[in-house]
Each structure stands twice: as structure tokens, then as C-alpha cells.
Length: 109
Image 1 (spheres, helix red, strand yellow):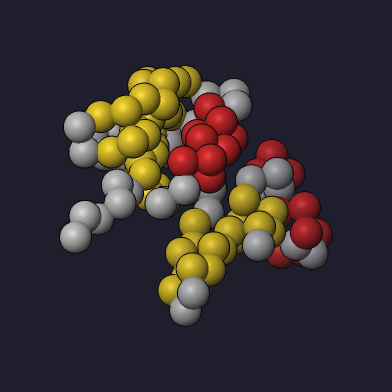
Image 2 (cartoon, one colour):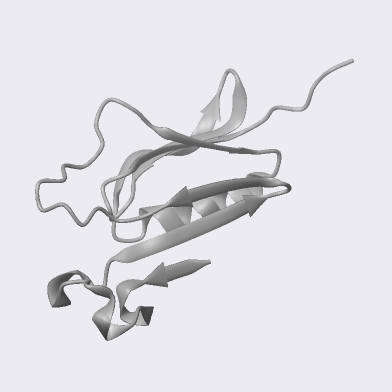
């Protein structure tokens, strides 16, 4: 679910130039909840020195996630095979968040 400032009441105190920002985004993964929001701080700087990691056991899903994040962003490593995974990719999304995408290799034995 994503809620932006345009959905807030006009008297909520959100400046007009900030109403398009994300106030509340949530992602459920089973019983776990990940939440995020845009910064309303004018001195915000994009993240550096880290990646958000997305892993799945499905190559098609990983490719679709990569393609969505790459739209309007910057590709740092095209999807390719590595010694630990059938697919690895890295991208910085259009919001400046760096991502690593990988597919969990099937476990042997």
C-alpha cells in the first residue's frame, strides 16, 4: 500500500511542494511488515555505502523485479550468472536506492 500527501486532508500541514511525496508505503511478507516513506527534509541525500538486497528462487521474477527497478534508473550490472547464483544484477532505481537482485541457487542433496 502506498499513501502520498495528496491523499491527506488539506489541513494536515503538508506543504504544497511536498504533497506528491510518499507519506507511507508498506510491504507485507507473510507476517512481516516493511515500511518506508519519502523524506520531507530538504537536506536529504540519497543512500550511499549500501544496497537493498532482493532474493528469490525464480529467475523470471528476479528479472521482472530488475526491469521494474531499472525503469528510469541506472543499471550497474546487467542480469548475469555468477558462481554463486544463476542470476545476479545490480541497479540504482529512479529514486537513488541501490539494489542487488539475485536468485537463490537450488540446494543440492
